[in-house]
Image 1 (cartoon, rainbow, N blue to C red):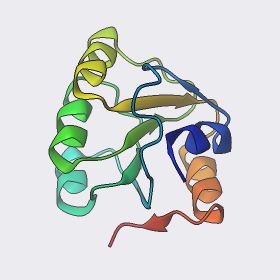
Image 2: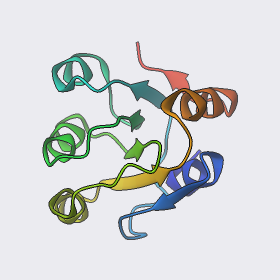
Image 3: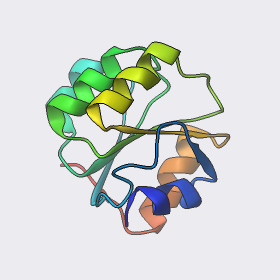
Image 4: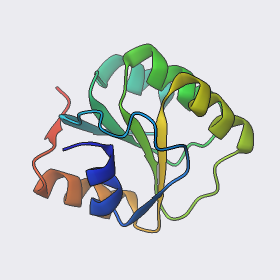
Length: 114
C-alpha cells in the first residue's frame, strides 16, 4: 500500500503535493497525544490524528512517518501544510471518523505499530 492507496481507502483528499506519494505504508497508528506517538509509532506508518498544528509535522519527520490522516474534515492549519511540504510529509483529510479510517486501513492489511 502507498499514500495514494490510503487516499482512496479513506475517501480522502491529499492536502499536500503529490510528491512522494509512492511511499510505502506498512503500519498504522492512531493517537492525539504527541509524546505517545513519539514512543509508539514507527517508520513507514500512517498516523491518524485530529491534531492539526505544526508539531504534528515535526513528530512525523522525526519518526519518518509516511503520512498523516486528519479525520472528520477537520481543517488543517496553513502553516502545518507549508511545513509538511518542506518535510515531504503527506497530509490527507477525510470526512470519515478516526474509527472508520483505522478500520478501513486494517482491513486493507495495514498492521498496527507494536
